[in-house]
Image 1 (cartoon, rainbow, N blue to C red):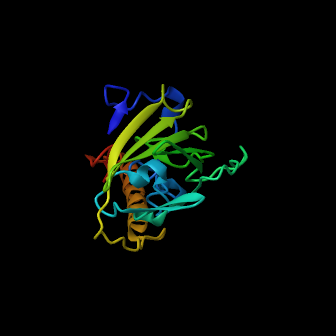
Image 2 (cartoon, rainbow, N blue to C red):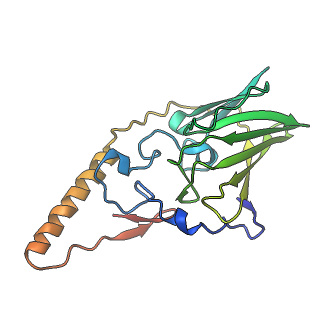
Image 3 (cartoon, one colour):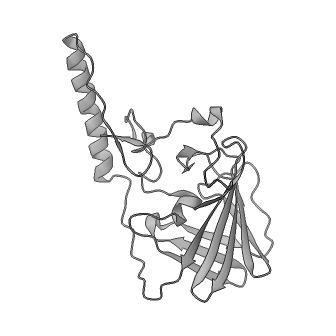
Length: 228
């Protein structure tokens, strides 16, 4: 999906960005509080890029256009973005939002959406970005049922250079968007937290006997190593 750089790879992450802790089930713990989980784990948001990214289910989105705005509502984690088209000024630099602050305009038949004012609580390409993140999305209808979608990612505090990814959004008239009934207190959270406590007990028992702590086992699951 990465079309720039030409090698199809996300550029290297800057050293200081590597120090940002990747929380959640794609990290290795410790898991002590709800804040140790990603916002996706907590059913809060997948972020702008993640919301359009393919997943195992819930890949639908509804795009609506009014005279002065475009509305994008995602099926998974139910985020909805309202993007002004009427020249409304952007938010002040001191205001940060999980999905950023977006403004749109047309360049010919292409809808261009520029977003800034992000928090640093969501991740792209397996790394948490900074508040300097800027996104430029381009929506171009290429036939009655297909939209070419490009998104350019710029964050001088996270990657060595900007990068761009592309995908095709296809219209499916019979597709039904269902309620996304996810909540922050779900079973996965409780189970991961209780497993961490069990690991701590086992480590303490091993230490009392003069032994080494139990090994943490990792499994490759669609990306970064995941502890199990």
